[in-house]
Length: 89
Ligand SMILES: [Zn+2]
Ligand SMILES: [Zn+2]
Image (cartoon, rainbow, N blue to C red):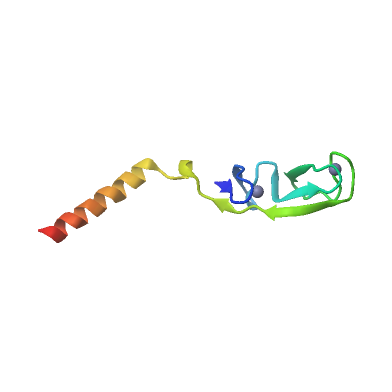
């Protein structure tokens, strides 16, 4: 799975799909521009210490190519071909 918003790889945790750093929310610091997704969400920027961090987005999982099993896809393709053949005859 990758995040729809930032394209980063998501990991499965006890809290569901989260960013690689462990947080649902990708946050950004208004002062220095730091971004990250630690858990729990920081109230202060770990880079410059400013209490000026805000949520950019929440992780939105989107399946990528590696999430599909090629054998599974092959099987459904064969099934569709079989259905077409029975329709023709
Ligand atoms: Zn994201
Ligand atoms: Zn900062």
